[in-house]
Image 1 (cartoon, protein in one colour):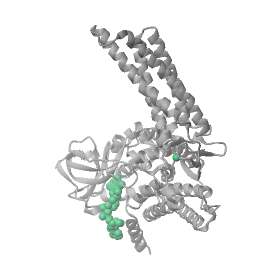
Image 2 (cartoon, rainbow over the protein chains, first blue to last red):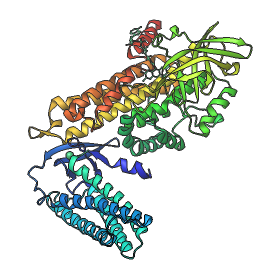
Image 3 (tube, each protein chain N blue to C red):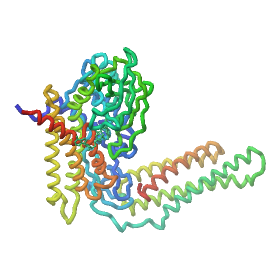
Image 4 (cartoon, rainbow over the protein chains, first blue to last red):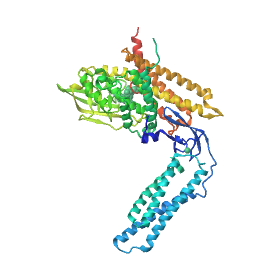
Length: 200
Length: 377
Ligand SMILES: Cc1cc2nc3c(=O)[nH]c(=O)nc-3n(C[C@H](O)[C@H](O)[C@H](O)COP(=O)(O)OP(=O)(O)OC[C@H]3O[C@@H](n4cnc5c(N)ncnc54)[C@H](O)[C@@H]3O)c2cc1C
Ligand SMILES: [Zn+2]
């Protein structure tokens, strides 16, 4: 049967019986096994009457841990800085609109620009450290959840670069709008990342 | 001549339903079980594919399938999710009395629309005080003028009651129990909230209260006093359907347990190599086949216009008991994983239980069988 949307997605869903992470049946490796990225359960997925039944064969322990938690640090630093930059822009907006001196505007503008640039650099660092973690901790295995994270990260990179560009050419309003979208994408990536930390 | 094979049409139907069940129903089962959401979207697809309204005559837009074909559909869908299966099949139970006791005008007004767009109907017989003993019902239909009855009473455990467009209602008149078709939009109908049940969460079970509900005489099935006969005759055709659904559950249990046992290792061997496990599977297989054969025989008798009350009861009782027994054993084969809500096994055990209760409990089926045995010379 031709399946669309959630019907298609649901068909491939398997839940790790140990940590409850939603895995995809497409995550199986050549041996027909999938190793849960969160708890390390080595699972064989059997298909029975349209259902996916996980059979746990083993648990992969002693996985290499991430390097100095660089990925986490880079992530949270960028996530924290973007709202700060955005708040500063709101401040700027009101300061300009009211004509009142609410701070040193000459300083605030480049500061916002700097913050946004740091967010972008932090984002790139997040991506790079995430890649290293994936190679080490997850042994470079294919996981739909990681693929989705990567896709969203690319979207984020484009949005952030665009926001900085718009800021540079002084289209502040448009830049701000783009940053709002970027914030949404960050939330999405963080949400997916959360699954990889806590399971579901 | 005995023939155990399905016709080409039935095989093609089975293939089509299986694909629908495994692609659409099975992946949705866990979500509906968790949320209790009524499977509207799935019902729409099933309706479009022509899997609903099996018994409705061609004259009124239906496929006029035999009981055996309807059983094939029920088994396939219930093997994927019997909660969704029953949500869809409640229609058949409600339509039964109209097909058996209704006139052409009633069929045109109530069955035909169901073939024109996805719609639901319910069979409202049980009351808080009258389950197995239907003769105890206290809902009344009083004639208020030549053309109208007023129905008063409380119906309980009505499958699909919250989504139905009309109800088959059994109520007492001066001349005994009588069947009525009651439009769900009628003034005076109060539908209760969805009941929280052990299993089959996708199915919508509610209480329905009738407070002075006006029903035109044209909606009466047959004559006053015909109701009990019509309601019971419906079971001859609905019980094989329910039995087939239970067979579907048993089949899923066996399939899950068999495949799992072939893969899972304990003490350096696949667990299927232990007789303690494999004999369970053998027993499941024996009971599954026996249940299916009993079910198909009852359906075949019905399709050929032969008496089938005893055989329907036998099929329903055996298939329901098999469903439950198989589910319990299948959970055992999966061990702790069988007990986990993340693995689609424990749901089957919760779902299976109801088959021993609705459409006449397993005990009531035995009383029917005994009554028939006593009558035989
Ligand atoms: C989820 C669900 C959906 C349902 N859907 C519908 C529906 O759509 N329409 C509808 O009309 N009804 C429906 N029912 C009602 C169902 O058919 C009744 O629950 C069933 O017939 C049993 O009736 P009861 O619950 O009143 O139990 P009781 O009749 O009180 O029986 C209690 C126990 O006593 C046993 N018992 C009773 N009499 C005898 C006897 N003579 N010999 C031996 N044992 C006996 C029974 O087997 C049972 O174990 C539904 C019920 C459920 C739970
Ligand atoms: Zn896990």
